[in-house]
Length: 275
Ligand SMILES: NC(=O)c1ccc[n+]([C@@H]2O[C@H](COP(=O)([O-])OP(=O)(O)OC[C@H]3O[C@@H](n4cnc5c(N)ncnc54)[C@H](O)[C@@H]3O)[C@@H](O)[C@H]2O)c1
Image 1: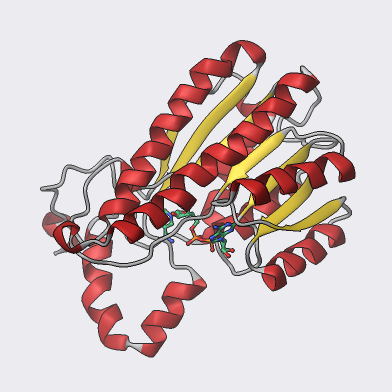
Image 2: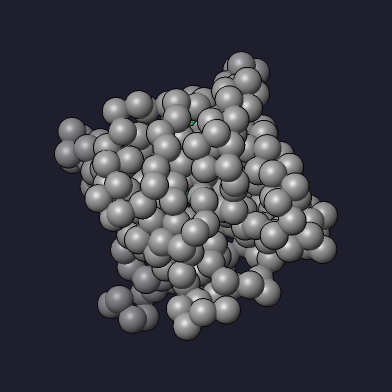
């Protein structure tokens, strides 16, 4: 092991949902590149993916851009075939995309929206993991998978998140199962569980509807002891740690990056020190 535990020089990372939109996938792709990894940028947003690729290139790394809807098995297979041709190996997979077709109560949920959510947020992660693991096993030098879960998969939100939360809970269990299945082959599988992130999308919603911000913000902040929504950059440190040798003995871990949300009892109150 070299001096820099975080060095990923010579590693190839496939990052799905890495399109440049100020979200978590974008931040993680650039972070891995910053620490030396070559990157396959996969997304359904071609323009966003092309922008991320330019940024990765500017860091001096080798990059591949691929249009891939992770819910479609053929597109996932094509992505990994392109990675084979371009890089000839896969060391790291980061699964980021999610689907949230509608915010309705469970008794009103259309079956189609249930399926759509699972197809991206759970089946898509499995399809990518399966392709990556096959290659990691053949390479014989281990590997690393990082899934993005959610606090919604670890506790109940009760506000129209039902299929999303169930799919994220599946991502958490997939993380543990794959970690234990492939530990002997040196393939580590971990997950990060974010709380609410102030993404450019949410910022725009708030800008368009200040009333939404006024009503939602206090409720969201009440659940985050650190007292702020997160930003995409908050995921850089945890992702670099979990994808590098710095975490070489860490596998099967669900790491909340949530400002203390899951640590706090649901009945927790800030009144005594916010007064
Ligand atoms: N935003 C939040 O408040 C929040 C909270 C908890 C967990 N999370 C989780 O964090 C992760 C990142 O969230 P984010 O809001 O930063 O999003 P993001 O902007 O990083 O990621 C979404 C990206 O995935 C792409 N994408 C969507 N569907 C796809 C598909 N089928 N195939 C390939 N790419 C696809 C999008 O084009 C986009 O570039 C998600 O897994 C999300 O569930 C987000």
